[in-house]
Amino acid sequence: MDTRTSSVRQHVADLQAQLHHHQLDAVLVPSSDPHLSEYLPGRWQGRERFSGFTGSVGTLVVLTDRAVVFADSRYWVQAEAELQGTGVALEKIATNDAAAHVAWLARQLPRGATLAVDGSVLALAAAQQLKAALSAQGVQVRTDLDLLDGAWAGRPALPTAAVYEHHPPHAAMPRASKLEQVRRAMALHGATHHFISTVDDIAWLTNLRGADVNYNPVFIAHLLVERLAEHERATLFTSEGKIDAALAQTLAADGVTVAPYAHAAAALGELPPDSTLLVDPRRITLAFRQAVPAHVAVVEAINPSTLAKSRKTDAEAAFVREAMERDGAAMCAFYAWFETALGREAISELTIDERLSAQRRAQPGFVSLSFATIAGFNGNGAMPHYRATPESHAQISTPTGLAAQGLLLIDSGAQYLGGTTDITRVWPIGQTTSAQRRDFTLVLKGMIALSRTRFPRGTLSPMLDAIARAPLWEQRLDYGHGTGHGVGYFLNVHEGPQSISRALAEPHMAMQPGMITSNEPGLYRPGQWGVRIENLLLNVPDQVSEFGEFLAFETLTLCPIDTRCLDRSLLRDDELAWLNAYHAEVLRRLRPHVNGEARAWLETRSAAL
Image (cartoon, rainbow, N blue to C red; front, side, top):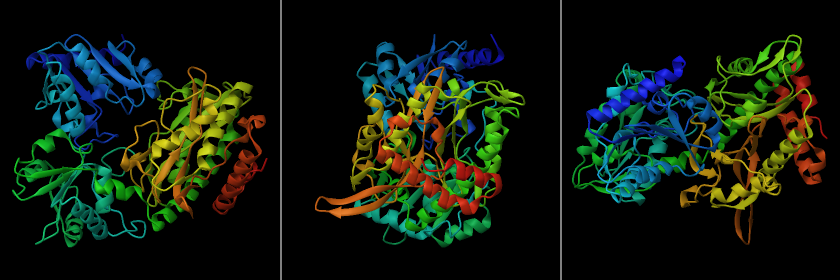
């Protein structure tokens, strides 16, 4: 047993000791924090600590005699490897079955059992579902305990990075205008108060940014927005010392007061009897909902800011286009070096991360990466969320030749003051096989099909998912992840409300002008290779017909797609025309930003077929 697996076993044992101490039968550890974030500060990375599974999504259940991680198909290979030897079992679930653990608990726990879950990190909607399912089986749910505290020696404290302002011109809409927009939406619900916990909503609404979460320029905070006849103010709850006096004064000019992070629940408890509070049940935790007095009327609806920030303004879209040109130039410089060095230098998956990140850092307006770079060679590329580590990574090239031949998948992105990027490309290393070229081309056909789609405004985004899958389905092939996620504006690389996926469609998922969504179909052969091709798309007006207003996609991402991986016999003439037109646009937009070897590489890889 190695050090890693033995430490996980000890951590599980520590958590089970807490179960015995509190006379509990099980504990649920979600991948969540008090803000229901996807990417978590260290303090709330309990699922990873107590299981060893490092994937970004998953749920841990620890019983007195065993531990189980629930993960979907994106993480099965990764989870099996990371859980091996830890004693933690993997429960494989469908990609859209985020509540699979609820049904499992209802089957496993006997009548009279008690399950603990920290209500401060459990979404209200999830809590309602969990309690309904388990109470029907005679299982009690306790939400007043944080068992991690007792089991986690040296648990990280709250992050302390400073908060800073996102200034014009990149902050294209003033803070006061955004607050007014949210208050107009509150008025439609008859709400006098609105409580927001999601950190990207707060960052967008306040035009503030931070560094509390890796890769996402957000900060830990809650926000209470008021809409009263006598005043319109907002209170920002964040840790002391994160906002300096000058910034606090600037916020105060827009009616935003800064208060201690720990006072948020108390502020809800002090709402007056005639208040009506708007909360989003999927974006507020159970603990905060329980802090609201019974005399306060509560309206449950999606956060207005979630809808508003998804629709980028024309000015924001213009800055995103500039960011895409900078990002594309960085990739040209990297790939020019890569192809020259291939077979002449030692290159591993780690080298790719280092060199590509360095090129991005050299670009104007760069702030950080937008997620951990995924560089997966051959079998590693078959894991959609693979991450190379110093302990485990593939060698691609040596000073005397290629380490192996096949496909290299690189999924990467960056945060710029004027936008967030996310791109995936697949490159041939040496000779490719006909099977690899066939897979690549089928994925490309799906990506092209979605890129060219026109659709009525208000179309529910999950309805578009099948368009990208159709070329794969024709060959009885598929992939386990969604086709597209929303992307923020110098914010989280994953945002809603739209999702081009198999998710059950809901009204707030309607496609509207200004939304940016990824287009990333894939195909994965476990242990062999993976293919994923990703561009970001902007919803733009198309035409108005007798059947209504139609939207189209503008492709934002600028980087050649390697045509050496193509099986041209599988492409129709119209698909080839799209690819040539895309490459012509990439060449036109990126040529002014590159020179020398980078420009030569761009011209070669953008050549028309």
